[in-house]
Image 1 (tube, rainbow, N blue to C red):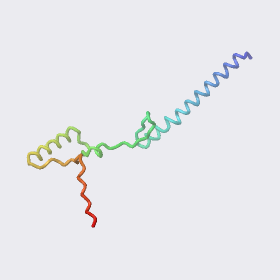
Image 2: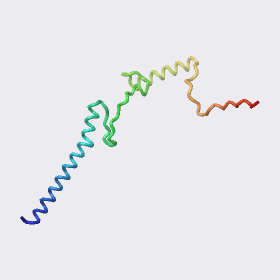
Image 3: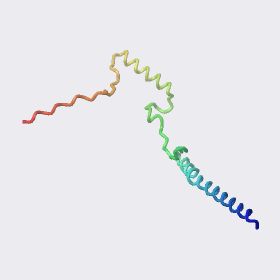
Image 4: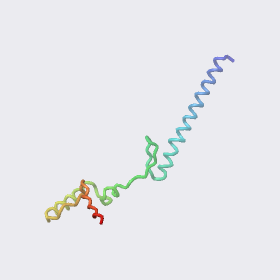
Length: 108
């Protein structure tokens, strides 16, 4: 056979082998872990390739399930205004300053 045809045959065979390996690598490292993660009810982050557990929003915010952000904010604002009208002190917030240290007793 013509040496050019033999060389082209090997080049195309090499390109085909590299393309097949790339497709398998993509399946193994991206598609299969994503399917496993989503089948387990978790979230797949494609950019970082991380399978993460979703966080339930009411656990973070403290508002009951099924209550919208607007309803909860209005309810809290009404409670705060009623507390202010009745003269209760505002909810305590942690101070930025540390308490003064207690002096150690003098040695005897």
